[in-house]
Length: 523
Image (cartoon, rainbow, N blue to C red):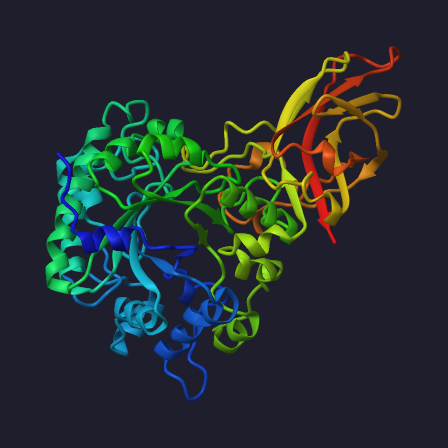
């Protein structure tokens, strides 16, 4: 089967969406010291002040917002519903004022000419109140330590569709997004691909519901999904995105979660170019060792995505507002947030031409854990670093993608160099490096620090690492190698590293290649 889409729907689906904001609106009232109403302001007005500050003053060019405020199929975050409302005290106070936060989202978006979607975390732990189904219907949940929603359960699918139906009938959203990355699994681990049709059937029923509601609301209603970074990872989680595209079940996909490298070309092939693709930058669940990336790293990530054919870029888990507004509306003292550097780059996310002239740092990504990694999403398990270098001179190879035409822009390049970070190098060890087959050398510092590296065995932490984990205290070896723009391939660059240990040292210990960074600095 394939869904019939009106000409108006197809036109809306093809609309240019350069900057999409996936907005965790639930935490806006509880983060950074909680929420209070300053003198002369209601609590709802204080919430509203936080809600729109970054959008109005920093991002400015957001085309679409996915409101991450439908986190449970049993607890409501809105008023026009039969479900019990979120019982967190701050939200109870907002309800007492008569606030309906879904109305806030819709009205604020439409005033600004921004598309307004509602996003649902398809699986997750209890949030915002008791969930009696976990007791009365344990068969709705996966029987392992996660106790996540099981999409192979007809009862669970009916429960979710009931919750969606109430929202679709009562609120004028422009679209809906299913978040299959925030928590996994949602199908029995080890059988995800075998059970994939249950997820697809759910999406078919939801698509029927949204298409039927288009006449009532007088406009197309989009359907989107957030999925892992590659087709292979989607298969691990039981997500048949090829069928979704073939049957016109979804209009767009947000691709990836905590990864800088996503397989957009693979998605184009699998979906035959029928859906829009938005790679995702998550400012909280970060790529390992880049929890607080520099503007140059972000420019490199965004430029790579645009060069790879992205239809737009999704931003996720940004803070809501500037620190002065948090201070004005905070119920108690809070830790200042560290993302101020982002503000320099965020307005450029949806402007590939503006990014072109910016200095960039391209990185080889590291592995790193995530609590909910029973499949393909979030865990970065296919990344190349850290790489183990044996001490016998045998070279290991890693890759670094730089899709900027650096060689073509040589006249505007002020500096170009490769930074290599190693752990476990002894003073007399000989380190050899090549870049795209060419031997390179550089300045070696055996007492370098790196504040972003965390103990690898503890990288299961899902959130912002500097808050939760101390940095590694070890000293590293950093080798900075000068390059010319002509050395840099527009695409995948190959780096080899080898270590030869002096014979009077034991040959048992090994060296870890921790980081590879290509810095391109434009005038």
